[in-house]
Image (cartoon, rainbow, N blue to C red; front, side, top):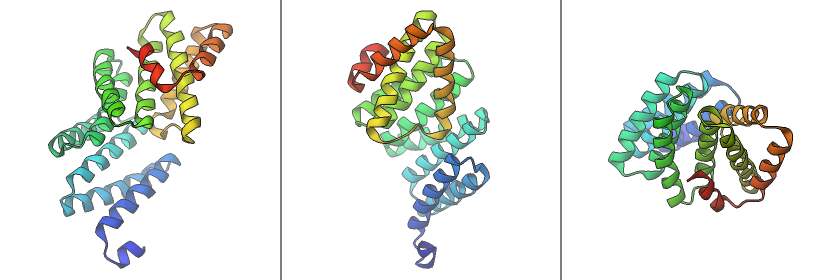
Length: 217
């Protein structure tokens, strides 16, 4: 590539992450892993530990996509440790949210709530709408999985608001968590009658993202 020709190692590291994320979105997990590892090695060599924290979070997402929860948790924890040392709240928030989803998959509602709550607070402080959306999906997942029936109505309202926000941003759910998003919506649809689901969905789509905090807390 041009970056490699110019021996721009930082450029190669950035480009590798971008290509890796595209590969992950397309389900090309081996290619994504190779590219993430390339970026990780370069970031370490450059002494860019903030960048290392981000890439470790990406590798956690990849491991979670593959169903390797133990490996995902290891990546996220290493990312969290580095992010705290570098005072990188963005990398910390993303890794905490990922660890929250691992806890959900392991059916540990207490740990999931703890990580998602911390992550959501950071994303709100940074005005990171996509991060907020991700955490909201995590909360909705917890409600339909662990909560009583009326929690499913709350989850659907939140998911309706999430969909509206994604449309506003011209974005879509990050692939590693898209499956959980779809699963949560599907479970709620089974748990609720059609009229209740549709009413909750419409109510959520009519809400602003800031209003959703009232539902969550």
